[in-house]
Amino acid sequence: MSEPTASSERPAPPVGSVVRLWHGWVETVNKDEYIAYMDRSGMAGYRETPGNRGAYIMSRDHEDGRSTIVTVSYWESFDAIRAFAGDEIDRARFYPEDDQFLVDREWIVTHYTVGA
Image 1 (tube, rainbow, N blue to C red):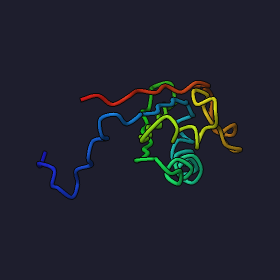
Image 2 (cartoon, rainbow, N blue to C red):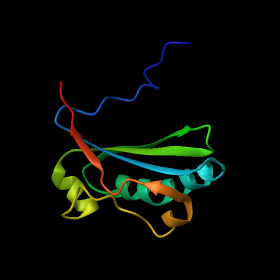
Image 3 (cartoon, rainbow, N blue to C red):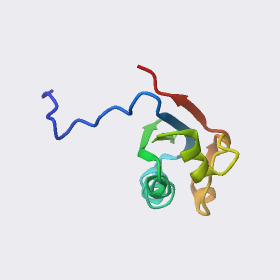
């Protein structure tokens, strides 16, 4: 494995940033389509909100034909998250077509503050 170059490295979120995590599950055959949909909807919503410092989608396929989808977003503050999610920032925000893809989901997101 080669060493990463400066252009391929992504900086870590600054200390004090807030990380927002959510998990959902889709049929593996629909995973790529769901990720593309999420990039156009939820990820775009994250990235367009002032105070967002980045957003990523990760996935993991399982032997049972399902895939876990994880969204990770980085925010400068809880107030910035509130601008995206509304006053109940621990509630996951869903989009119209999510029901077509998700076979299970977390209704509550998890937040972490980045330490040293």
